[in-house]
Length: 105
Image (tube, rainbow, N blue to C red; front, side, top):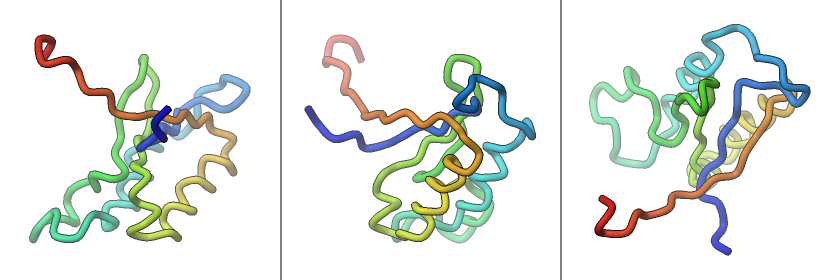
């Protein structure tokens, strides 16, 4: 079984309550925007979310997708994101990218 390459931090606490404030995902991703793979982002990188930590919606729930390569680029940032989820008792779900068969693309 392949290792997960990403994990989701869901905007739900471990007891199923919605996490507040409602813009938590955008705030967290904004703080993490400077952590990115070398050579990405260009001149306006500070105005974009990092491709390694980005907000999304999953089944109607705000979430943040964190790419595991963040650990290699900046271990302290990776630890910060994991600790944020733990401190706030947020649900975390491991995920990996699954390629669609060529006839389904």
